Length: 294
Image 1 (cartoon, rainbow, N blue to C red):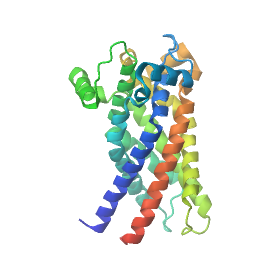
Image 2 (cartoon, one colour; image 1 turned 60 degrees about the vertical axis):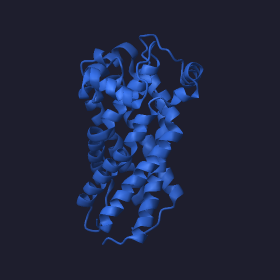
Image 3 (cartoon, helix red, strand yellow; image 1 turned 120 degrees about the vertical axis):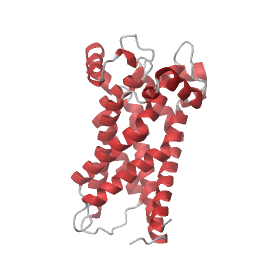
Image 4 (cartoon, helix red, strand yellow; image 1 turned 180 degrees about the horizontal axis):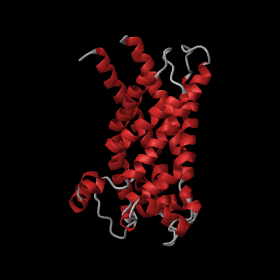
C-alpha cells in the first residue's frame, strides 16, 4: 500500500471518528428535530414545541429515549464521511485552476457531486432506518428492539427498497446540503487567505466558518429535510411521491410546516460542520507534515 493510499484511509477514518463524536454529543437535537417534522398538524400535533417534545420523551422512555436511532447514524458516520470528502477531493482536484485554487462556484459543484454520491451510497438507507426507529418509539406497540432487529424487520416486510424510502428527497437534500456548505466554506477560506494561498487558518476560525456554512445549509434546505423525513416515516405510504408529499404538507399544514425542527437542526448542524471541518483540516495538516506525497 502506498503512502498516499494509507494517508487517504487515515483521513477517511478520522473524518468518520469526528462525525461519530459529534453525533453522540448532538443526537438529542436530531431526535427532537425528527419528531417535530413527523408531527403532523392534521393529526393533531403531539408536541407543543422543542421543550415539550423533550419532556414527553424523557417521561415516557427516560433520557435514553432521546438517543433512539443513534446507532444507524454511528454505523454510517465513517462511510458517509469517506464518500463525501473522497468524492469532493476527487472532483475538486479535477476542477482547480492553474494555480491550484478552487473558487466558490466550483466548490459548489464539487459539493453537489459529493452530496448526491453520499445520499445514494450511504445516507438514504441510514436516514430511513433512523427515522423509522424514532417514529416507531411513538407507536402504541413499538416493534423494533434494536438496530439489527429493526433492519431485519424492515427488509423482511418491505424488502431492500424499505431502506431506500425517500431517495429523491434525500438526493435533493444532501446535494443541496453539501453544495451550500462547500460553497460557503470555500468562499470564506479564499476570502480569509486573500492573496496568500499558504496562509494558515486557525482552528477556531475554521470552526466559525464551518458553523456559518452549516447554518446556511439549514436555512437553505430545511423544507427538503421535512419532506425527506415524512417520506421515510412509518406513514410514508400515504404519499405517492416527493412532489405529492410537498403538496399535501402545503395543503394541510401551510408553508410554516416546511420549517419544522429548524431550531434543533440548526444547533446540531452548526456544531456538526464546525467539528468535522476542524478535525479534518487539522488531521490533513499533520499528515501533510508526516507524509509528503508530491
